[in-house]
Length: 254
Image 1 (cartoon, helix red, strand yellow):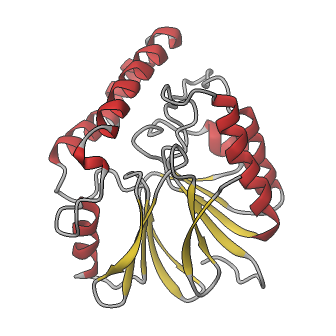
Image 2 (cartoon, one colour; image 1 turned 180 degrees about the horizontal axis):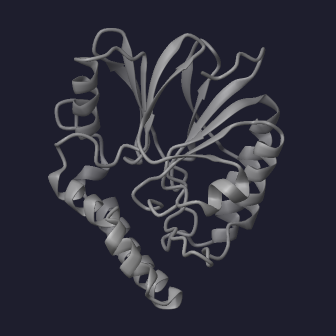
Image 3 (tube, rainbow, N blue to C red; image 1 turned 90 degrees about the horizontal axis):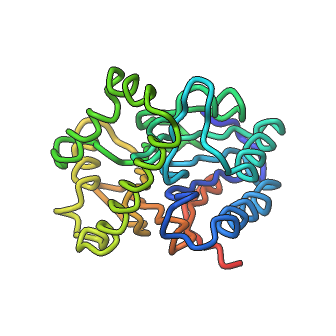
């Protein structure tokens, strides 16, 4: 449970995709997100980053990806100041291991968490591979998380391995952005809304907060609960704010 702090807020963001091939100016994109972090820091009680913050991330034992120094330094600044930063792995940065938590002080989550914030129950996660609905991706995720296959991938030289992964990521992103699935499919077709209903059948939550889908939604679900897609920082620059009584989606327009 997060500690009550008068006037402080809890912020949520996802799908920044730092380093994505479709982003023309990577430095400007990173600086924009860091500018937002600078602006919210004085009012932040806790920060939740719900996955795909990096478009690709893979940690070797002695090697980490180049770049992202402004962002990583800012996260360390948050945690050094005593502000908890919760980082959820997404399908693009699923291979965060021990380097980022040790170096920046962030709290790493590989699975969704349930947490009570100011007396309300939140179910929080990136959203990929939950429930039985997306069988194709669930199979793919089982490959990505297989420790033997991770060990074999680590045997490849980083220049080759990272280049290969980025090429695959670019193809996957372009394919998804141009598909019908990039739009809201309706309550009966959205896998995560179906999953949330399954959870509600067993346990009540006031809020379900997810990333992953790159769409911005804050709508009722079930009896008194709300379902939120946080959007992204590639097109929407959207984020969530919990002020202790109300959850809002907001947009960074700087």
